[in-house]
Image (cartoon, rainbow, N blue to C red; front, side):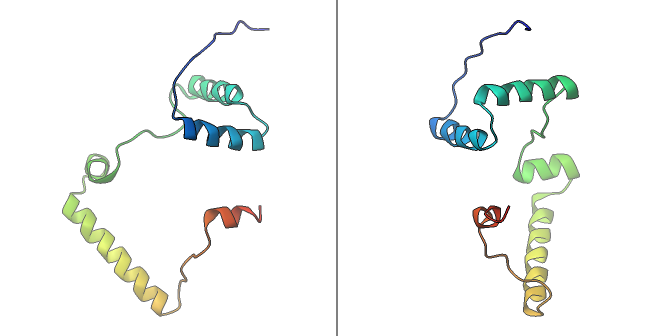
Length: 104
């Protein structure tokens, strides 16, 4: 067996409890999850998910979009979506994601 190292860290209690429940449903322990995360970090030579700013700063840095342009685009998308709903081309999703998972 390979040598192991004990890691200790502090995490938000409610987040830890929720994560433990999810991991248990997957048949994993928190230690298993950390081992999987570390394996992916080694394989990818980085984190296996994006770490980025959100909102205006991210949009401007990533896409060169100003806050005003982002606001205009969001307003346009909302307007076009409302018009498409009125025409019956799309319908609003009313189910909560937890309800959708029940069918999985």
